[in-house]
Amino acid sequence: MNHLFRPISLGPLPLANRIFMAPLTRCRATADHVPTPLMAEHYAQRASAGLIIAEATMAIEGNSAFWMEPGIYSAAQISGWKLVTDAVHAAGGRIFLQIWHGGRACHPLLNDGAQPVAPSALAITGDEVHTPQGKQPYVMPRPLRDDELPGIVAGFRKAAENALAAGFDGVEVHGANGYLLDEFLRDGANQRSGPYGGSLENRARLLLEVLASVSEVCGSQRVGLRISPLNSFNSMIDSDPLALATWLARRLNEADLAYLHVMRSDFFQQQSGDVLTPIRTAYRGVLIGNMGYSAEEANQAIADGQLDAVAFGTSFLANPDLPARIKAGAALNQPDPATFYTPGAVGYTDYPPMTAA
Image 1 (cartoon, helix red, strand yellow):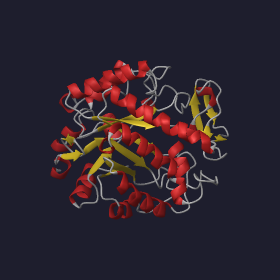
Image 2 (image 1 turned 45 degrees about the vertical axis):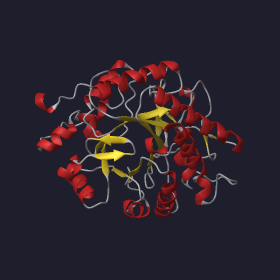
Image 3 (image 1 turned 120 degrees about the vertical axis):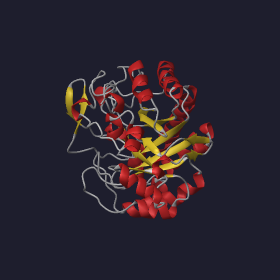
């Protein structure tokens, strides 16, 4: 496993290893979307990751897509996240914040009755959202007007400023999994005309504007991007995901980002293909792979030059000391899906480390 433990730098940030913690929504914030001391404990437990990418966090007020997820738009939220970053840094870790807009995955019951927004009037189908009134079907979103999009960009920019104020080492822009920026990017959700619809360049315009604005705040080498060209989660599809992934990877060379974080497959196996090979060929920066990697496969992918690091999700969820377990060849705790989104410490901070296993 020596390749996983080679140090790597993201711009000015030296990292001890290439075992990253993927962003994992856990719904442990308060009803006002304020991070809690329990969240600080959770992330500090996992500070041995080369980089922690904290969970999807609301960049702009009124765009909740989960019940009890955190935000980064209020003073209380900045203070709550400061507890997290201080705890991670005290434990020797590095942490980025994933900033996010839920788009059409938001629901009126989570947002004081507000209708969700999206590139086009197309609703998520075949799934339901958790709300204070139980599971509910998704609703039809309102298409954003072109003149509203500068406000979206400004909201992400302010979120990045707030993330720095909260002590984060950088930010990851969430461009994946059928949320707002991904909805603009893929033609299955973006059927608008004008400067933000139609061609690949137009569909990517909002994402690239967000990246440019956030980079002005943080410096581009403290900004990452997560994409999921194949993932059909949240009713997503694209007519040519390989062309989209290749075009975007090539275009992102101009952005000089800290990294590009790619979810390599589809949760539901509706779309298939190899997106990592064309992305690796086109993209000159640090490339992070994610989804279903074993330690052995991750190590080999880095050894072969396919990836520079790998982000582990549920295995980090259940194993706070995952790097130590990988190095020792130790057995892993198994995650409990029943506690993924439930409140409290159970299934969150009570997974035993190796020494206590």
